[in-house]
Image 1 (cartoon, rainbow, N blue to C red):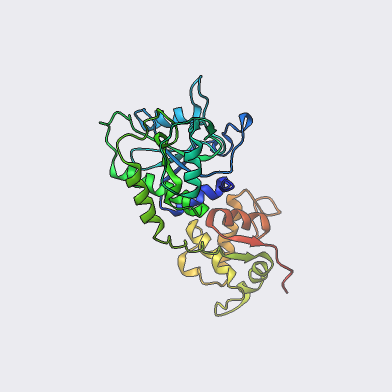
Image 2: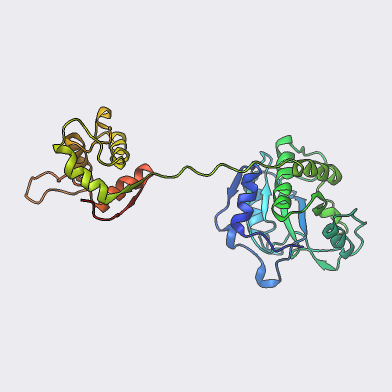
Length: 311
């Protein structure tokens, strides 16, 4: 048994397993917690939907029916392998099931025959509904089976579970047939194989450049009068590259020297934001200030700090 993963951790686990995840609006706060508990969780349950068409399937699993309100699962696994997150928390997917099965899933031992329906499964299981008519003829594309394997493995990996924590609805609640069309023992074997392979950690996101406004202003004051294009502050190059991308500065002048050409280009950037000089008809002064640099940073992926006054 485990405490349910936070919503963001669930999303990260699915993405890290290589899944194509679609966040349906409001999924993090869509649940049935008001009618009963959610967690601890013991495993991952797989279903089929008896529906056709991804958009309609996602809508039904999100909203439910008059007799069975949504969400009807946590994620919908579509024919194309996409995982559509529709809910987080208690969901109407498992219903009442067999306490012996719950004990076996928790211990990750062989599942007994499900012949009772006395234990609340909506509290205890993550649920994935898989787009399929469930008639034994509707095919299961390889990409969808792979997504089921990955989704189950993602949750198990995040909780530290093995493949024995994965089960089908038909193994939990007497009379339920789903999923029809593939064997759960075979799916657990696939999940076990995937769990045996370590997922490499994603490389850290590249650090965004940071421009110190005080040092940038010092460069804008000093550099125009200096001969030989010396660089007084390397952060000036970050701003110059952004001005080049805006079409305001010729690329050869992106050299880290906040010279006359850069001042003129920055003046044009200020005027594009509506700034003007103090006298009527006078051009903007080309001196970087927090508002105009921040606007440039927002468009070009760097950060601005005020810094301390730089002499």
